[in-house]
Length: 166
Image (cartoon, rainbow, N blue to C red):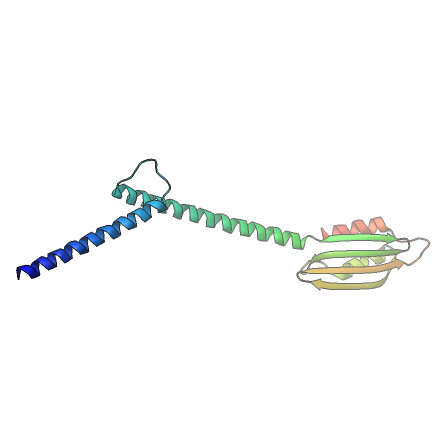
């Protein structure tokens, strides 16, 4: 009986020794994960420092996520502004005029508004095309002067078209 009791006591000692080795390995691993410290810390200090460090990391993570959301929203707004800002090009070829407009698909004006301005400026529409590429619409209007001797009032047409899209 004495021999059986001794073997269980030895087993408990071995189990406890293994538990302490395991805990020491875990604390060593924990200390490598913390920012370097100038002096050696006790186990309670290390656990306290680890707790503080994890809280700091959580706060930093929340702040970074907030910044990320703000940046994504800002980037999305810039993307929308860039897509909706129309680009107008008016080229004069003597008695012919070419108008190109690149804009977002959902702009608040119609192609008929452009045609009316051109006609009021003395142009006869030869062709008008519209192409949709991704989220943009590309309009091209070719026109010629109704009266070639008089021509088309290019500068006033350009100003009126510009005021229409702005």
